[in-house]
Length: 112
Length: 422
Image (cartoon, rainbow over the protein chains, first blue to last red):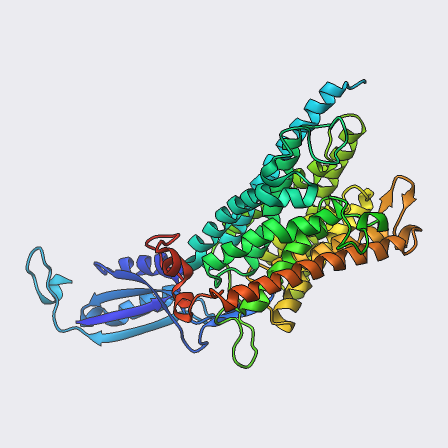
């Protein structure tokens, strides 16, 4: 099993959710996060003077999938979240040791 | 149509009360504007200052201020009887209505100070200053033009022909001068200027509140200027109505002027500067509302709206004076502009009195002398008193309190509970 963590533009969340449902992902976890990437935040103008916004608002999507679903999931997320502009975000993949479905007690891929 | 003395008395008095209530409402406008332009961690503080400064202004003006300015007696003891000393007999309106109208102007002058020194001044020190400002600084300078008194027995602004109809100089510029004195004494907010002199903008927390505040001020200004005709009925009705119309015209021109200036200058239209532009338009016409033609009123406001954009940048970036809401520009620089514009293209019953419409330089010089007298007086006295406060009880909260925010440090109450406060 793999844990796919994607940090995306907030307004792309609906598209990503749609794409993941289409390929059969059963559930995702979403959080509102802040961060910076290669641009190191950006500057905004207030009354003609600049100020730095260090951390930009982003949306983090976490999806647990089986090994077979991994490539499809990554394609779905990158396809749906891409605008081609700066700040589209990143996808991280980590190994997932175990998963348990609390109501039924199922474990492993069955619990996803 | 004949207006009897009795009817005229009733109309004038009623007009004072209505306009006084409108100007009182400007206190709400300042409170909302300032609450919108400070950071959320300093909101409770600025709201408290705005409410209490109004209460102090009303109290101190009643105790002594009105006596200094117009001779109404300590605690108004001359007021209830025969009217104000030196007033026309029989008075054309109830003397207490005049007090009610004048007292709210004092609060306006003090509200301007609160915005400039926001986000770092101790509440107690601020309130102590409010007492002096509303009891002495404002009433004394106000007496020079509106009370007809000599400036320290040296010269008389009225005899010089100085005109300030509703207070571009007397109220707004003087308030801003006191505010600048406060900023110079207390210093910039933490994080505003880096060690190498780089400026960082500190954006306000709530643009809807700032916009609401501006609209409230705009509305209240109809009382501020319109009421300064001091009478309603006959020719006064026409005059007062024209003044209200010009006030609105100038505000609209100011907002448009500032909007397009920022659009061209910054690349994007700036909401705070547009609000400042509307206020600048109002300040621009306050002195000359009774001495303008429609073109004059429009261009006074339009240019005021352009001036304010550059004044804020200049004061913030070049002079390195950290005025939290831009009061020194909106009320100070533009107050000066509003005062001298009468000397550029003002008119009176006989025709042009300005440099550009055949009036020569006499009026312009009088306006300069008056404007200078008000600025120097208000700034110098405020500076002295702020310095005394700094040496005695201290003006500024500690560095830790400033970082934490004055809401928690001084009041223990957040304005927006549960929200992250920056």
